Image 1 (cartoon, rainbow, N blue to C red):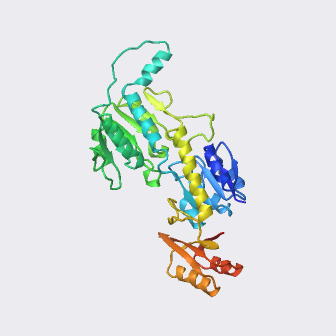
Image 2: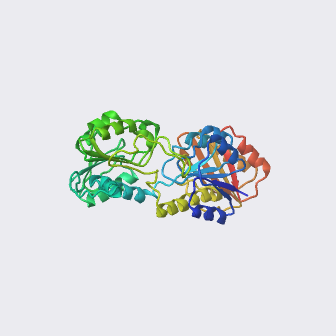
Length: 399
């Protein structure tokens, strides 16, 4: 029986989907550190996590039964993807399921900060009636600068224009502008014109320290800053200085370099207590609708991978879209992408009298993935030969 470990309070639908396919599921509410995870993964074939659990090379090396990791979120920088691929462990994420949730909270915070709702709220809770338009502005007619024009950035661009904002964006990759959005040639050019700057970059190592003292100083006086991407891309000490100096008019921060592992744990940050600053506990994509959609999407990917070998939208293996097998058995062979692998597989099958009913091959850089449906029963000798091929990373036999 296949076993799954689901961490960080994943949506119950993920458990339902996997159990419906005969998988034994263990669920835990919080994240695990490296040693705890290694111990918990013994005999486990599928792992489900969110952003806090770190799947390191050491974890992967210590989990020989692990077949796949599902990141029930957008980011995958918490998984050692290359090490996972080298051990034949597929990784999946949810690149689209919580996009709308992040966009909506971004828009809500832009409006709240521009209207200085945080200060009006705080005053009333303190028993002070402060009815004033001072410092409060409409978002209509203001310029929104989006750094990172991916799934979230593009949808935010469209909705911000619907509110009457002008949109400029900067992305290191070539991206198609939507609506009237204008691409800026550099981050500095964006900072020169934006009244609101919001970060939606991915978790690649090159983005570490992307936004620091120089960038905050370059922003327009009174501009608003938001980060709902990754905590390590921003120097929050520099942000604190600019907020206290009055150069930055407000900020909304949802992600932090170090985050508590469990609900209720203490939280420390230089940004606590600052005026017109909204702090949220990494909940940009945490709506009930998004978590249900993510639970369904990623659990289905894990289920399909173990059942059919399908790697569609895997972030670290060659992608093959596969339906149920047509033969008696299905061989899923992950290998180093060198010449002659396919010929070697087919020669081995032919020498053992195994007829091929269907075969698909995909490559991704140094990796190759070939799935073969065969008509006859497989003797142990066939699998032994395929497993001992020098290019083989992992062979799975799916009935």
